[in-house]
Length: 266
Image (cartoon, rainbow, N blue to C red):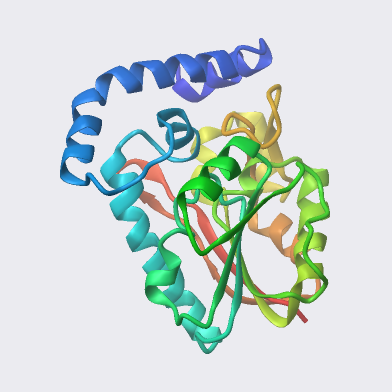
């Protein structure tokens, strides 16, 4: 049986989240030596609890920490195309346990201010206790955020829309546009055409017609809640705002890569 069809079956029976927890425990056992070696090599690095890392990334601690530095640097390479990297207010929307935002100050001027927000209170509690010089706050699954209108120069969300319902797509996009300054930038990723391999034939048909495909029967916002966004749907979501870049994801090492969208608020 195709693993994606098995996933659909588990979802229909309401077992997908329990199965995912089992996968965590298996990964936890398998990565014991690797995790132990990481802390030996990096005694001064604080990492979130193992399940936090699994929920938001994977249990390779080296990838979680070292590759996230590269991701932060990669993000800045896009930001500098459109903004002078000084005196910016920057928000990580859906920051999780701070995987990326903790590294951004390494690559930006000290005049910039950094913020992170997430609906998971445990993540934010850990971030506030372990990551200095960044303002973290808890949001709800639905808007609004606590920030004033036109406050941020840049907002980014890495794989955040990918765990939301259709209703929340539009509610959150409107909220992000509210808190972003005119000419400000929204950077986000989606499950685009490369992810059709994870869909059933019926779901692929809907996707090809430009419809958002949602795999639910689990907690919205959780990693097991999946949303798949055809470019036509994303363009409708964006509305009259300006698309600065759309980079379709491809498949690397048999793994689909997410689409990148960079939007300027008009």
